[in-house]
Amino acid sequence: MTVNTLELDEPTTHRSFRLTRGGGDPVGQQVSPSLVMPDRDIRAVVVAVGREDVAAGGCFSVGPAGVQLWSGPWDGALGGRGESQHLGSTDWSYDTPVLQYVTIYRVLVTAAGLAAGHTTDSVLARVLGAAGLRTPVLTPEAIIPAARDPFRSSALRRR
Image 1 (cartoon, rainbow, N blue to C red):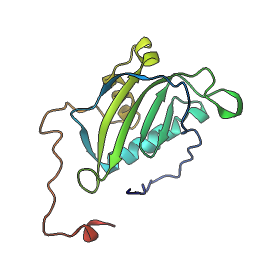
Image 2 (cartoon, rainbow, N blue to C red):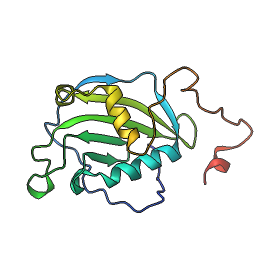
Image 3 (cartoon, rainbow, N blue to C red):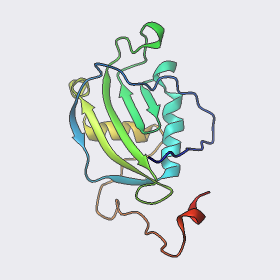
């Protein structure tokens, strides 16, 4: 198991990311091709969606492995989700395939998301759009990360 830290430019408070029952099973999901992005872009996404957290009146719930899109803020008892419905999720992993990159390996939409008119593309666009990023056109050239430097050890690449 690998544990990675994420350094943000701004302090954030995420009290809303937690596992919930009955959030809806994924109806549609896109797993291939994966989208490889510089980690600075994902840091910008984490900060931007953190400002629109479901606990603060927004529609996003962000955690270390991705972002959930909800129909509205969580207004239930004791900070529970209340009437808000899980519409979809974007999942990623850090330092894959190389350091300083993040791989978005899954975007899913739930039945509630489909009913609201969402697709995997619209969920991804909404998450990336929160940070002003556009959804890239996925071509083979767009998903190939920078090559590893075979002459640098992994210990030297770590900050």
